[in-house]
Length: 226
Image (cartoon, rainbow, N blue to C red; front, top):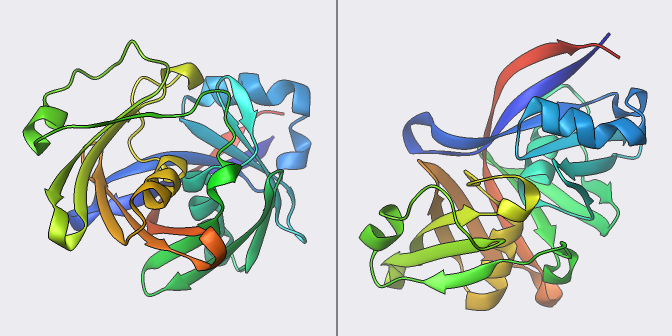
């Protein structure tokens, strides 16, 4: 028997939204050939297996694949490691070393847009109004539709919904990788309201990187049979 933590990542104002993430801090006890099945069983959009606490080496899975990098898993894992007394300044994923830090109640990561090297990339569609984005059905026939509209362009505030059906997820409550790509596309600081109430902060980083931050909260700790 082992345990995993359930963390809400990119929690919005009034404790709304947040994308649930499963994190196995002793991830090495789950063999690689079982991880896709475990991720699908848990039902979160992504699950993290911490393979080495000392070096902060982590593996990130969606129900259909292992990912080289992802945003909400790195933000959530960084926050959780600090909460359990193992804070880190870098997370190590297959794509590279991910700098991470805290500012107030936000946990930040810095990433390169090229790290979002998924089997399918988002199809970005800008809508004229927030109402049109809100009215979309909770699924898409496209492999990955990312729908968005300006809520207040001058303030950098936008509304988005993401439908990464290729990954076995009908609608993603809050996606950091897509936020990295949006930050690279728009080249400015952003505040993204995604899903039912999640909030993602985005800002340009050095040397073409993008920084994504958000609030996190612990939901529960569960037992898991090994």
